[in-house]
Length: 268
Image (cartoon, rainbow, N blue to C red):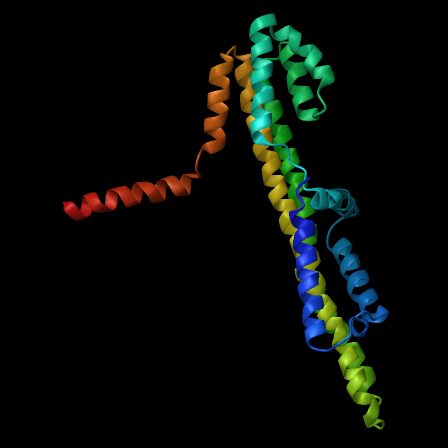
């Protein structure tokens, strides 16, 4: 479990609480049911209205993942694939059928079963790549749903403030009430900004990052298991996968190449 999300939220809300305390205000002044109901209820509602029920259900199922942040270590993933390579080299590809039955990861289970069944390497690659693409699509949908809610929340907070200020204008005959009522009116804007930047956007961004890690893990598993099917030596499988994980982005490589070429051009 990666506690980064929980730690971040605790520090963020703790900073808010510290500010309120230092300003001499009271937390109860912000915990007003009416603006909170509007901001949270309407944000979720327009989020659903902007997508589909299937997208909303998918986003709800992905929410626990943001708190757990569970993602398998790439080193342990590589070690397990190397273990499959050693067993396949020692006992044959058919022996991987037992590992397929015991595997808890559906992606690995499917790959091992197809290898044991003698599926063609090219067909297996297409099958695994399609599954990776489907997983990436699901991850993007969940992440985009919460990021979209983060975009709606501040505007909904402003709507709540406008509604409250309309009520304030009805009380101009009672000047002694105007100060507290105006302060209360801006609580809706506060909760709109707060929920967007402290809750919805962090959830969306975190799910996007966890989705990237999932795709990276599945890619390593795919390349490793295809190498196992091809009969590669376990040591070479491990080296290849570690090189794949350690590989720098293409943009970084181009940047380094440009840096190396610049002195050469200047010398010329």
